Length: 496
Ligand code: GLC
Image (cartoon, rainbow, N blue to C red; front, side, top):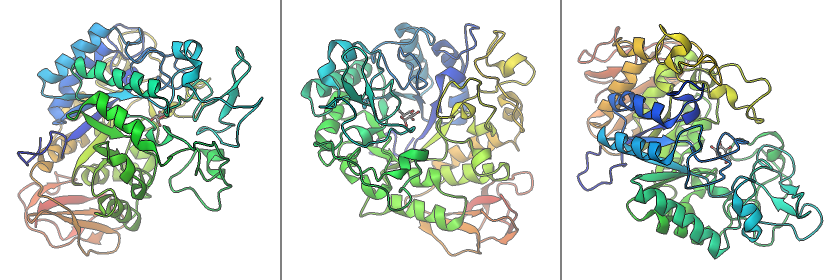
């Protein structure tokens, strides 16, 4: 909910990402599904989030966790049916939650009927073998041989994900119709997957060897080339315009544009916001975090049209990435930045990475970030499934499951809920202020100050008035004077 009467609903919104396979199982088959999501939506509404993003629920052979779509306007039977999708959309709206679908426009599944019925919609090599030296995002050549035709096709990700040719009008029209289909069913917007890969060099030229580290982390081998031609072509506008036309002006379009914030401008001509990936990858120190925030807010670049994100289904979970001792300040940081913010299911209870699967479900090693939600420690499988075998174990969480944390005012979950409420009251803009070494401090609007100790020692806190919310409320209650020292992993939002 925005404090600006004319602003779109998403301006300062909190979007809660659901990884459907791991949220809630309703039928006992050990995998999450749409009916299960509907049962648990009140948890998200209680947190105070504004919207839900569903990772893909479409029919898929699941070579890439559903990001290999075989039918953009259907529902995979493992998740339910279109009727169940309608039910979830309606249930979300009843609770005041908007709903975003995940659209994967860059590639289809190799099992999508288009691949056999409309091969012309894909990108093919003009020779018997790879057309160029491009490397796929998860390693290996970005070209594979289609055994049926003997021709070689491009895949920016797994070989099971052939890339569509977005310079074709029929591809653009077909995908625009997909967005329209979901808008007509009532969804409020889309997270657009891997949009920087949508359009590549017209001549399919080789990528040059990298001369330094990539701007954003790449999976192993993919970072050995500078991805100059294999992504981010200058004529991206036509493709994005088609997506916008399909979605309509009111739909929220959030781009997964895997580029530094300084390169987002051409995408933001059609998209509302793009993820701020520098922040997601920033090491947990003041210089890096401050730089990541500044570049995203830079008026000459992304100008704050970003979706902040610290966690998603592709990355190590927060306790593993920033350390258990810093999950509270991570919440404080993400939820006090100006604009739209995304959180990943389980962040609010401090879910950590779990063991991988053997053999792996995801060949790129991301299974361990995708364990089922832990709802209740007193029932089998944490309440995720009443079946005998969850697809991955619902591992215990150090701070307890949702049920225990909900009742505890000092829990991480309570911190998330309180910060989401506080966030509505923070003013416009963000100005960094001087603070002790290792302390990140900023003003929000005229009235609020945020201070976060990112160091491993106690530090002086910047001057502030009454506390609005501290990370450790049992020691520093709301309404009391802001402390003049912050222990490691501590922070607050206070009246300036
Ligand atoms: C995005 C998704 C990731 C997927 C990839 C290919 O980065 O977040 O899970 O593997 O796109 O679709």
